Image (cartoon, rainbow, N blue to C red; front, side, top):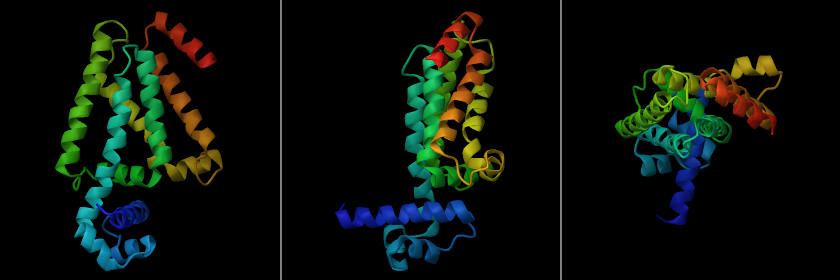
Length: 213
């Protein structure tokens, strides 16, 4: 792929993520995406063929960061380290990819009707691996006997707050957009709530020491 082609595709994908995040799929016009990207509208169709295909590419671009975040959960056999790393990684995604995160969350709220099958397959397989990791820790007594599926759902919902509830967050914090310290505090707060809820009493002492350092 030529450098010019890569550059133009990147500009279009960035512009598309901003437009889809602001307006939603149905209300977004390809002419507005092209104008934001600073390229002719014909280039958009040359590279992506249709608005639907461009939307799918935006969604696919969010899958890889999600898979990388999931991988850190299973890198350590210590659930305290794994859960803390996983929550931190998911909050970092929201900070580094705010527009695509909003598009992805919006699509899921609509039932994933336009989520490409490739995305569905990758995310389903990754979710199953994560749940099995949690179940293994639970079976070995490293986590409290909670339902692993609902624990995973809780983490997902908590770490999406800054994407889904931007208006509410602005009113609570008094800032138009979250700052770096907001993301850091979100990761620490969610991690503490999760660990204190699922880590057995003996390990909870270790989690307190972890936050004290």
